[in-house]
Length: 468
Image 1 (cartoon, one colour):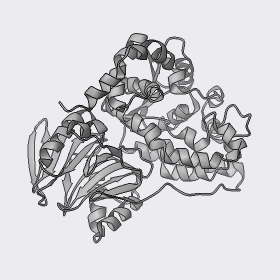
Image 2: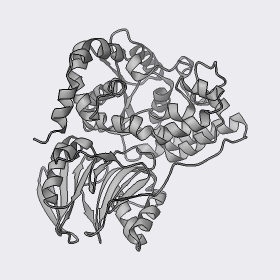
Image 3: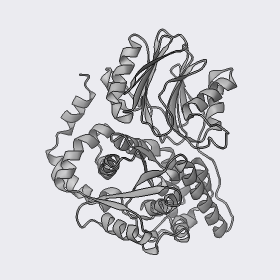
Image 4: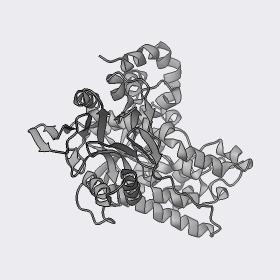
C-alpha cells in the first residue's frame, strides 16, 4: 500500500509534492512525481529520472510502502500511479508488478479511455485506487468495495483529505467505490456482486462459504512470509488466525485495559491455538497520548469512529515497531453475516437482506476509510479477507434465516459461527457474543468519561485543515 496524489492546473508539480510530503507516512521508502515529460523517483540511494509522455498541466505522484513492487509512477504510452494490491495475478498469468499489470490492461485495450478502464477493473481482483494519464486525459479509479481510499476536489486527488487541505482545497469529496473520475466527470465502472438467496441445503452453503474463505485468505497471503493480525478473541479474527496460520507466520495483537474482555478471550484462544500473541495493556495516559494521532488520521470528530480506531491504531503501531508491514483484520464479517444487534429487528420486519446490502454499499465511509488511515499512519497495510468479491458473492446467496435464526437470536452470524467451528475455531470463541472493539477493549468508557471532555477537538481540526 502507498499514497497517490495528483493535480491538473498551475503549479501542478509543486502542489503534488506538497501533498506527498503530508502523506509520507503512507510510503516512506520512495517518492516519485510525473510532470512535463519526466518521471523523477527519489529513494534513499539517490534520484532516477525517466522520460515520459508530455504534459504541461498534469502532475501525479506516489509514495512507496515497499511490500511487493517497486517505485512509481510507471509509464508506457501514458503514466500510472497505484495504491493497493491485485490478488489474481496468477490467474492472469502476470509476473510483473501490480501497477504494470494495470497499465498493460489499459493500454492493451486501446480505444476509448472509459471503455479501457471498465475492461481493466472487470479483469482485476483486488483492493486499489489508481490514476492514469496520457498527458491530456486524467482518470482516477477506486475498487468496487472501497477498501482503498481516494478523495478529490475538482481534478485534484489524494489518498487522504489532509493532503488536499494542505494545498488550500476545502470542498473535498470521496470517490465512490467502483467509480472513475475521468477529466472531472464521474462514471460507474463496476458494482458489487449481485446474487439472490439460494434454496440449496445449509450444508452446501456452509461448504461454499468455507471454500470462499480459504481462497480469499490464500489470495491475500501470496508473496508474504509473515503478517500481523488485529485480534479480539472473537469469531471473525480467530477464524482468520486459523486460516492465516496455514500459510504464513502470523503474530496476533490485542488491545485493552486491565480486566477488559478482549485480552482475556484473546489470551485463552491464542494459547489453545498455539499462536504468538502480544497483549497491549493500555491506560488512560495511553489513550490520551494516542488521541491526537488517531484524530489526525481519521480527520473527523466522530466518537464512534475514534473508539473503534483507537485499538487498531495501537495494534498497528506495535506491529510496525516489530517490523510488520501487513496487518489483517476481520472487517466486513458483520455486514455480510448479520452480526449487529439491530439486524434482529430488521429480520422481524422482513428488511434484513436490503439492510445488509445497504450496509455493504456504505462500508467504505462507515468503516474502511477509518481503518485504512489509522494503520497507514503507522506505515502498515491493512488487508480484509472478508471483503473479497467472490466471498461477498457467496455470502449474498445465504438466506437471512441462516444468518440469524430469529428475532431472539442473541448470537447472530450463525452460519459463519458454524463454519468457524468446523474449521478449527474453539467453541467458546465461535459462540462468543459479539462485543465491538471499543467496548471489548474498555477504551470507549475512558474516552467518554476522562479523555475527550478535556480535549479541544474543534481547534485541533482547524489546525489540521489550515495550510502552513
